[in-house]
Image (tube, rainbow, N blue to C red):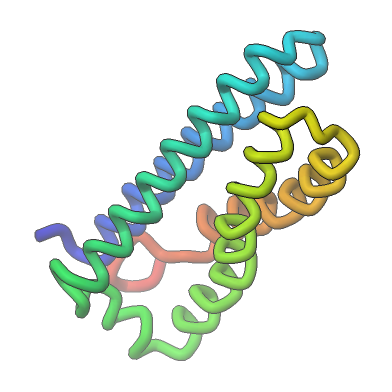
Length: 138
């Protein structure tokens, strides 16, 4: 079973990877390739949901104590809580963003996209830079 810091490191790598995919999607959009934009967003969605569900299975069923080291340290716990303030709403927003994009509901999709961009930026910054991937918190 992986340690908490190892799980955090794996999740950081996953967040960076899907963020590159998201940026590629935006580049496709700017280039006028709406079909590629949609396909990359579907891939982003599937990979992100898979990571979230995998994490949930790990922390709820396989090893509920994997993040005890974070919850036992007030500074680390605060960093996790700040991260969750961005990551949970962005995860909840993703299906609506995907639905509106696939249904070509442009106005709603664009409004949700702006909100998602803010939330994902917060998710990226707090996940990659605030959460420790070493047991010592560094």
